[in-house]
Amino acid sequence: MGNFHPTIRRHHDFDAERDAKKVHKACKGMGTDEKVIIEILSNCSSDQRQQMKQKYQAIYGKDLGEVLKGELSGDFEKTALALLDQPCDYEARQLRKAMKGVGTDESVLIEILCTRVNQQILAIKAAYQRIFDRDLESDVKSDTSGSVRKILLSVLKASRDQGMETNENLAQKDAKDLYEAGEGRWGTDELAFNDVLAKRNYMQLRATFEAYKHLTGKDIEDAIKSETSGDLEKAYLTLVRCARDCQAYFATRLYESMKGAGTDEETLIRILVTRAEIDLQTIKERFQQMYSRSLAEAIRSETSGDFRKLLLSLLH
Image (cartoon, rainbow, N blue to C red; front, side, top):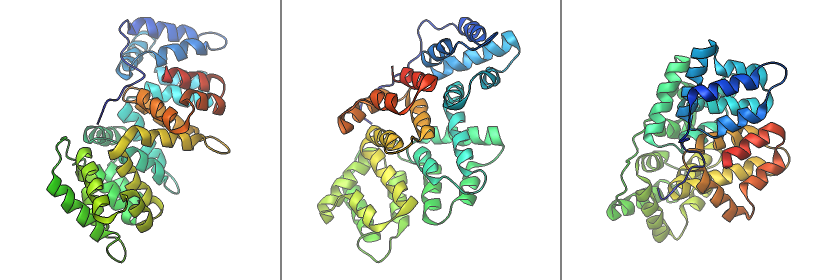
């Protein structure tokens, strides 16, 4: 899917023991040295943080996550703990949180499940089972309903073609099927949409969207907006936008999390933490192109204190 660049890479001069000791010292005695914690967490990769966590446990006999929980608070604490988690574990926890208790936060389910590649989905499912001793597909099935449930279960199968080849005949056929399932009939036949959007590779989907425009004179996104609504519309648009330009999708999510009154810190944390080692540099560039201001500037004006410092240091 094009060139994407992370903001965080493996630290070439990493030393798990040295960092574990530095963090320990930063948390010892009166007050906490947040600067040291920010510097260490944002300057090494996720698997290096795991090594540091293990080293900390070995030296001090304590879980580093629990230690930080006692030392930090608010959104700064949430971000630090998210960084200490393996990405698949963190995403599994986010999904569980979105479904636990009364009501379900479908937008979190959509954002995570409709944007991940097969391998990530399989890792998240395994992490969910390991951490909660529950089956992710069963939970999604019982916590969602109707058409949204169907598309989420389709993406959870992790059966998307991972190739880069495009087949023009298939694109024509899929475009026709989508038209007949949507605009070409009363009501929408979601099955055709689920099949195409959850299974085809991204290059193939782009070819299908081109063919759709050619066939109907309408952009697929406009067709989806006129044929669906609510969470189903959100899920389909997420899949389409990810196939077209995943980094632009996340740039938009970040923009919307900071737009208007109040900031959606949870979304801000989730995207920066989970994309830092994948494509956050590219997301930053897209954000600048789309909104004529830098992502750092937007974050600076919407957050404060150590939380702001940690987010900005993830942007490097």
